Amino acid sequence: MAPQQASTEQLETAVRGAVITSSDPRYDDARRVYNAQIDKRPAVIIQCVDDADVAAAVTFARENDLDLSIRCGSHNPNGFAVNDNGVVIDLRPMKGIRVDTATKTVRVQGGCTWGDVDHAAHAYGLAVPSGIISTTGVGGLSLGGGIGHLTRKAGLTCDNLISADVVTADGNRVTASATENEDLFWALRGGGGNFGVVTSFEFQAHEVHTVYGGPIFYDVEKGPEVMKLFRDFIMDAPEDMNAFFAYLIVPPADPFPAELQNKTVAAIACCWAGPVEKGNEMTRPLREFGPPLMDGTGEMPFPALNTAFDGLVPEGLQHYWKADFVDDLTDPLIAGHAMHGPSIPTFQSAMHIYPVNGAAHRVGKTDTAWSYRDANFTHVIAAMFPDPADTDANRDWVRRYWDELRPHSSGGAYVNFMHEEDQERIKASYRDNYDRLAQVKAKYDPSNLFHMNQNIRPA
Image (cartoon, rainbow, N blue to C red):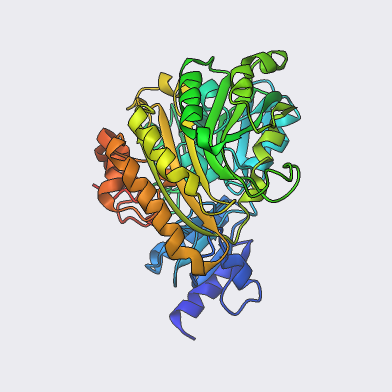
């Protein structure tokens, strides 16, 4: 019996979850990830059901000197959730959620998606700040920062992290919070999956139930004017208001009017999370400008807004992304967007400009690992398309667009949007926090076992 085979059999006795190898009929489904360009063949996939399973899997990878990937929701375009000939810790069976209405906190296991969290919290009139797609995994979004519909009202997702249970590289479980393992807690809030496997998160929730929001479409020729409207509107808006700008192709399906389907437009998607009866008034400047081609705003439960765009980004598309932070949405930047944004290649693709001001600015740039507290916006240029034959054309669109905007960048990018970046680019995204992160990495993962990520190397 080969040593690896013997070790795998020992692993099967050490864990309760499924241990899947290439001979298992479940293997191809278990190794498939969000980005269809990723075709990795791990040696073993461990579908963990509890912390003990995670600890056994970490120990197995470390003792056998194997690459180790952590799978939560698998939205990352890099495909870090899988590898070739290594170990995958698949947290998706770990779906427990507990809402504490007295403290307005939510305890979430590492395999949950934001749709799971929204469903559990909404029943109590609560929400945790997350992104804009409900199928995104809690773990990846939270550890990289977390920008979405509630950023201006309640901060980044990582700003609302109260504590985390973490299995570290030595196979031990620790709790990180403001009073326990404070250095690890600091690093987890923006430092990505570099420091261990987070098996559960405790979040501060907020009183958000029904919001006023949705997308508004404008003639693409008015894109520069719409961007200026968006910039001026969101810089002065109350923090209960969030909105992002997009260039998009209207999907060829209901509920979109037939005359707009497959038409390229400029858009603003908004979310008013204050008193819902004020929503109509607070969004009026956006709805009256243009005039718009379509006004899709209205009152809706918060989970409905968070699922509104899910259908555009199913698993199985090809992906290529580039991103940046910018201090301000200047006129030269707007001109660059207007040059390339209208050439968006598919209705699944995205060019979004998100605000990161409001509550996100009330946290100091060294208070968490997430450094860009002085930037007001981040943009992502994401080509998403079904046919691999279109890869070169889609990649070229992203690169030309990004190169046009790059001179106006703040210097780094939101790590959850980064794709195929080099080490210097990763360092630039953490700025003065990088050296401290490398010290924390050296303490909790000195051998860089957790390197399938936007990697921070141990000091």
